[in-house]
Length: 529
Image (cartoon, rainbow, N blue to C red; front, side, top):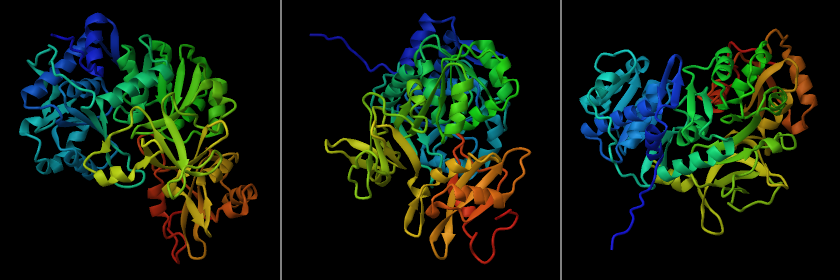
């Protein structure tokens, strides 16, 4: 007896239906270029069919290295539709590190923007899995690379017909490397479908959504609103590069409804003198994630931005919490609670779960939790914590606590915690006090080696434009508002901080820079108090 065949419906299956049933609706806008869902799906099919014709098999990896443009999305979803595994790479990473990721991922094809071709050329001899016709360039041509348009010439626009299953891998996302060597995070089609469905509901990304993309498409944070918008047949407005005036103008012009931005971008928008002149009334949801959101800035956004502000804490591995609009006023300093069906807990050094109010490492679970780190079984095993029901939680490496209502508060990365005289010090506590000082625009607190205390906290300060940077006064006022064990030993003037693509400060690099601060010869070219 025959039965109905119910295949696993994936994101690219849904997008194909929009190419048929919402054919004339705009799918993506970037600058003067706009593309309908029909044309978008047709070009995705071309990428998929050409890759398959050149020997791509289901499960093969394809690296993609480019800034924001429509072609990036076409290639990304073309890889996925062919049954390939997309490996988006950051243009902010150094060439040798990029080469290691391409090699580690076992990529068989490499798509790059023309501006990145010279960065990758020196390493091509090391890419022994990539065939000569597997190097494709987006944008202006580059010697030794096939232009994307030539690559797609004559490729079929028909559906490739690859049957995908939920357990099939869909991407490998390499970590930002804020705490060491990047690891490849594997997600499956099941992970990403649940990711898109969950966040579509939370962030109101339905078919009428017009999502303005103001961060890099290779960053997992950008996918928080990009993928739900694509899943529901909305429209993306892509910015090749973030500019505050252009952002405000695009929101007004296209009547945008949703966006994801990092806290630094919110701060920049608040600084625009003509901010109130733009009509932003179409905005439904402003989402912040990627790095700590100062409560003071959060309150300004709540006062001045139309629509609802939401904050997400999460890891690319596949866990998170959400602070919703109705919770913002009362729980401003929190990062919210898990979404329905997710879980979060706090454990001690021995792996015992702690009650609400106590500080420890955050562990979490969700429906889109990665199955593994790519080719790193030991790292995968190290990251697993089992609850009493045997479920595998992720050990996040973040330190935090839950209040009596179950709201999560992030205190620090476990590796960033300062231990001075045997006492645990959380840099975020000191940073929050320092940010209240009128002359301080931004601050980062790190622990540096100390001959007596083991470590001592040091405040690295970026002053506000035009503000007099009296470092001795800053140090005195800051320490007057701190507990004795928290007091900073030095204040150092900085122009900026090293950051990853989503604005998170790379404290590991700062600790390396100031490692010898208390040695006999202090680093030069620094103003120190």
